[in-house]
Length: 380
Image: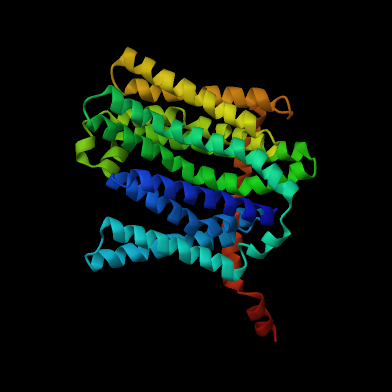
């Protein structure tokens, strides 16, 4: 599988580089477009080995190594930016060089350590390449639709409102909502290999349990977070955006976002469950359906409210449609209910909270007793 991924990824990257080269020949007269076309392919090549390594490590559940890779990449880029600021060379070109260098260093590290498993390319399988291509065409469609879904609100606001400040107000609230994506991505990265392994063993029951557990726990944990964020929205906006955003509608938009934040874990896990069940086309349809609902809802919301509250409110219906459609399609393959997710989420959350004092006790006990080596030495 790794060798086939390497081969297919290298071919696709090479095709993208050729397309960028052709595009550069025709659009080099526009400086902004020329810069994007020029650096897109270079950055993609620099990141390619490290991306393969992250996929392999996630499948192997080596989250410690994934953390190290992310630390190297982000750490090198951060250090480079600090040095550029100190040397007063923090211009666009220098920042691009720094980003490419940090990506290249990370990729080189994965090749030297063997984490990227580049030698596996000699063991590629044409059958596996065919399967990856078939799966990937839907995954690409899902990714493009997800990108359009996340950016459609901003594009529509720019089109419908003359005041550019409205975009900044909405963008601030939207970025704050996406803080929830951080633990959500961590839970997905942890659950994905286990769910995939369960399907590989044809154990749909265990796969369903993992999906219900992680989606349920995240949903239950987000409820108090959403309540606190709803109450303290003005304070959060003031701290993050500054005093000039307090008098705007940013806080209320953020409150609307937090009202449907509890739908995000279920929607995300329904999506990856469809992919794991080898139904990527259904997941793509789900995201496209959400995109259509979001675009139509934005225009209808603006027409009714004449402000950005209509755009924010339409997002509630967007994710609600995604959850309903995902649930309807998954029910054809898995045996569960929405109530099962909430019940298991409550149960698992209780177990986590009950076990927290014991975990602290175990950690303190280990620190007091010391390592096994010190115990042996003290015994002697």
